[in-house]
Structures are given as structure tokens and as C-alpha cells.
Image 1 (cartoon, rainbow, N blue to C red):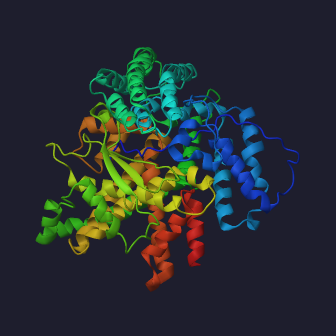
Image 2 (cartoon, rainbow, N blue to C red):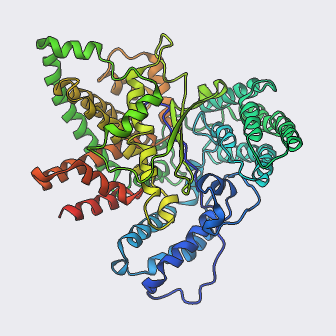
Image 3 (cartoon, rainbow, N blue to C red):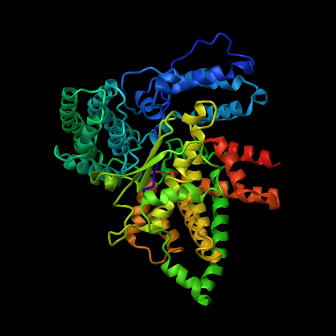
Length: 600
């Protein structure tokens, strides 16, 4: 797998409360000619009042009918039955269109909206205690916020002033996160002690690192202010001083509040294991039910977890049968053994490798309409312990000139402090070409409904990026033997299947730490106790995260194999990938239907 701490930064769009539009006729079929207008209304409901999302996703929001709104940060809450009624009256009205009368673009837009509504309807209000995790060791909002603030775009004075308002909002926002954790604990859904410890450590590291002279939120943002040509020298000085005051003031105040208050919840968790152990007083297995709903939403397929377990176990068995061939090959083929023992997939800088990928994949993937400049940045040392190994920052929909990838120095080096080139090889394919960056740039050049560009399935995005990273091994053919390339692919798939099964075991089967350890020992008898505990704790904290990458990968790979069988000798990778990319980040079952229809 990429790494246990793998995460790609995206702007999360949460639908908590919606304004109700008037509904003169809430019955009967709607005219297909009005579909695009209604879809645009849904877009405004979901995006229109979110200033931060607008800043990240649009270079010129006014061109999309968006106005500036008062800054706000996401706060937790439960989706009540009344809220569901409002959602179904507004967004859910899309179901009144006859699907068969819509064009291809409208059908995919319809699918995405309906999938969103159905997922909201499927959850009980109490499940909100299982899904709202604003504080976390690295997926928590407090861990992501510094980078989001540093990357906030300064296009006008209003943007700079809004940035300061976000800093001012941190204390009250973080207090709401702690208050919600208290509420969760009172209802039997308290945060495990080991998660509390990790959040507290992250807050402590961040607070300790704040130094007026060199802290990244001061140095980086003040440099951005200096680069604002619309400011006078006096204005730049004033804004930079304000930034220092806000970072060392309200921002740190918020982190200090979490640091001081969250530990008071230690010992209140009723469950330090997976979701399967949450059961209501009347015997309803709410944790397993929630996991299944969330699993289906994550992977984009309406299958039961029992079916998914059978599917993944078949993958594990198939991988084990193939591995036997390579075990024998290591023993009998010295050339293959030397490849396994001493391979190095790249020896260039990340920038050079990305430049290589931009042309090396030409025979496999469709060309991009625009060729943006790619800048590689490095996470500040203060964030290294609580950040993923790498991250692609989603670029504005209307910016086709520049893209950014972040790397974490603490995670991309080996035990001797040197760059881990083999890890970077697949990481850059995942984040850059032909993974996240490539997929995002390709699709934002498509003439499709705007909603399809802002409401994306994480399962599609991460499944595609994982497919891209494993596909990158295809470039090695000729440089290495086919057996060795196939072996690299098989190793990745074997690990992916194991991690996928572990997630289901912890959260659906209800494995405790000992059962989890026994499962791992079957595959790695030499694993350390500390590694087992670390993996178990991360799985407990972030259910279905592995499925976002691995289960979805297998579904895309299965689709590839099925299409190869259908197309026979005429199969073309570039055409196959074009069909998937043209769908954009939709739930994968709709992508599969679309792709198969092209070959049938």
C-alpha cells in the first residue's frame, strides 16, 4: 500500500442544513428541458455559501454565479429527520425526472445527486456520532487546517481579510469539536484514549513549533502577502504584522483549548475497537449497519459486506496461488532473484520523474488538453508527524496553468535518511501522472455539468489513483523481465487485498487486537507487536479508509480484465482509460455501466 497514513487533500463539502426552495408542484414528472437549471440550483445550495470551498475550487467564482459570503468553518452536528425532509424536498426533487429522457451528461449528474440523497436517507440520526470525526490524528480537521489556511488563495484584499477571519474562528470552532466529543461520549460513542493521545500530541507539536521567526504559517503566508501586487508597501507590512498576531493569538488559542480539554475525556470511551462493537440498548447493531452503509458509499457499489468479504478472500487466495510461482522462481532463476534483491525503480528528482511520466504514459492514457506547470512542495517539519506521505492539492476548476503536489520528508525517506526511490516511484504516479493530478486536470477540461466537477466520489478518485500507481509498473517492461514486473504488481494487489480484509475484520466481524494479530501472523510471522498495535489503532480510527483505495482498485482492475475479454485483439488501453476518465469521479457502479455499454 502507499502508507498507513495515506490521504489526499480535498475540500470536503458537507450537507448539514439547506434552505428550502418553494415547491408549487412536488408531484409528477419534470420536463427534461429544466434539468440543467435544477442541477445548477443544487450546485448553488451545496457550494454557494461556502467561502473556503469557493476560494479553493474557483479562480474566478463570479464567473460561476458565486458571491462572497462570510467565512465559516465546518462544525459538527446530527442530521435530523427534519433536515432529511428538507434535503429530499430540495436536492431529492431531482428524482422526478425520467432518467431515460436525459442525455449522458445529465444521467451521470442525476446519478451523483441521487446517490448523495440516498446515502443521507440510509443513515439514522444516531449514526452521526459514528461519522462525525472532526478531531483525529491526521484525518482530523485540526491536522488539515494549517495546510488549508496556508494554501488559501490571496487574489484580492478581501481574501486576505477572510483568511484572518478564519484564524479568528479557530477557538470557537475547536471548542465545538471538543463539545461534540463530549456529547458523543455521553451517548456511548466516546473517542478512544489512543486517538485522544495522538490528537493531543499533534496539537502540542503544532503549538511548540510556532515561532515568529520561522513558523511556516508566518513565513509562508507573509511571503504570499509580499507577492500581492495589488498591495502597497504599507499595506503589506500591516497585513504581515496582523498575520503574526493571528497565528500566535487565536490560532494557537484553539489548539491549546483542544490540548487542555480533550484529555478530560480519557477513560470515557465504551469501545476501543471497531464499529462492530457498537450496539444500541435494544440490540440493534448500529456499528455494523453504519459500516455497511458507509462501505457502499465509499466503494460505489450496493453490495453487502458479506459479499465483499467473499470477494476479497477470493482475491487473497488467487494472489497466494500466483505467489507460489514466484517463490519457486526465486529459488531457480538467479536473474529473477537478483532483480528482486536489488531493484531501484528511479534515481531522479521528484520533478524529473513527474516530467518523465507526462510523456511516458502517452501510449496508455489520453493526452491532456492543457499542460500545467507542476510544483513540488514539502510539508513543514511541524506537520510531518501528522500528515500523509504525499498529497495532491486539488486545483481551481478554472485554472489550467499550475498544479501542486506536497511531499512529506519524514515519510518518503528510508531508515538511513535517504530518499526511498522505489516508494517515490509509485507515490508520484498516484499523486501526479496518471493519478490524481492527471485525472483532475483531464476532467476539469471536460464540458460537463459543474456539479460533476465539485461532487466527486472518493472511491473513484482513490481507486483511480491506486490503479494508476500500480499501472506505473508497466513502464518497467523491457528494463526488467516481465516476470519481475508481474511480481511487483502481484505484491501490491496481495497487500491491497489483505488490508481490505483487515478493515472488514475489525469493523464488521468485530476482531479484537488478538484476532487481528493472528490474521496478520498468517501472512507475516515476523511482524512486530508495535506494528500490529499501530495498524489496529489506525484501522479503528478511520473505518473504510483502506476500502477507498483498495476495494475500488480491484473493481477497476476487474473492469479492465472484463473489457479485455470483450474487445479481444482490438483492446486499446488509451480508449479504455478515456471512457473511465470521461465519467469523472462518479460512484464506480455507474462508471462500470457506462464503460461496458461502450464495448457492448
